[in-house]
Length: 411
Image 1: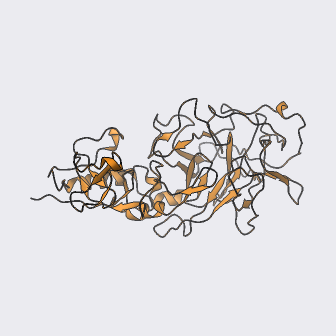
Image 2: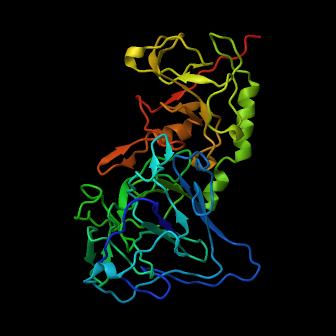
Image 3: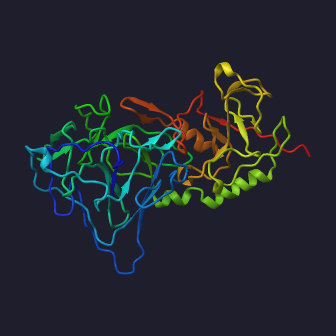
């Protein structure tokens, strides 16, 4: 599988490194057996793009989608090392575009809290050919990730500013201009998970410590005791979008959409009320989408967690239009509508929707909220920042999330 950056933005880069091959290029491929006629496709896993809460703003269409399923092909198309060429006239190699048939999915830059970056003025930081994932065709269907870089002839292609070097065994290795970073969670992706350490993956699949800055010429140190094998819950950052890898076994432990809907209905059946206006609150149906909040929409003071219906009092205009004073505890902070997280693959457990991310107001289980609140995601060339996995908004406050305090019906 090959992931590409947004083809509508950015510009192609010249090449001075190639690995020509008959069906592709790069390294480490074991063709394995071919699929039998009529055989059910084997699912290797899924990639979930952080920040979209289940669907792209314009809808999941073709190769552009927020959830990418990887299945075994009828015929293997893996790649392996071949002859190396140093090109003296870089532009002789035509750059591949998103229309090339080796591209499986096109990933668009994600803006914090706003979904996909749209419009011709946006400048993508995702490499045009971002990364490759090779999956073994035999059990246990191990998936390995590699930094990519191809041209239209399926040859390895790296920009003139990309770091590159010759390995001890005579092959060429390198890094994409802005890098492909991977983080494997400690303890797997479960209720006991903890964030791991971010590493950079090379074209040959070797693991390195991070560079001083995202596009620095000097590579990090080789980490010999770690591999490029993806685990359930591994995060892949493409410098513009971050993806979560889920294995089939991991997805079986995740809540289903039916379970999330049952939790929504159960929460609404409890008839939570605004403690001041005494109106009954209800989470909207996911079919309505994230439009303007309706009259029953629950709102929360993200510093204290007290849930209310919408009201117009308590504004602190000197501190911003969203800053309100909670009428129950007098804490001042953002006052936002609550939205249920609808991307089940981002949840660590099927626990009840008890916590909300601050300041966006997306609701999920306590363990899911606390895990993502302590997981630093790459931002820019140097920074790391925790973000809501459902919308990509940067988290604020001491804990990045808050326990919701509902008031039940008075009758």
